Image 1 (cartoon, helix red, strand yellow):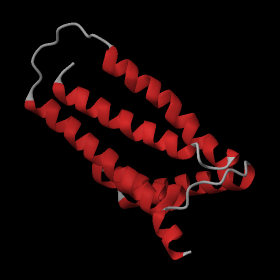
Image 2: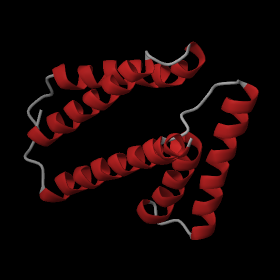
Image 3: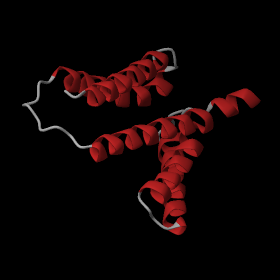
Length: 142
């Protein structure tokens, strides 16, 4: 496994393990969502780390740069969710990702962000009664 691939897998493993460990301290309803995402993600990143791929040709710089950009987007997405919460931060992250990375129009990006916020709020919080993380900023102002 190339060094950058291993570094990305280790970073993701740390993030998912940390998220899952923190979630264990939440109330039952609040810890379900992070654990449903985190536990399978931990298993997949461990599988990624232990697999032994066949010898691959030397990767070009463009592939490495694309992976670094993708990792930066993942970090920015996680920071937005941590600061703004799942609904608000996630909606902003979706809109920015659609606009900047996928090159969608502002109209499409804003519709995507609003749709994700509505889905998260109405389906998970209202219908299923799952308490989603409100964000560090919201906790700071309480």
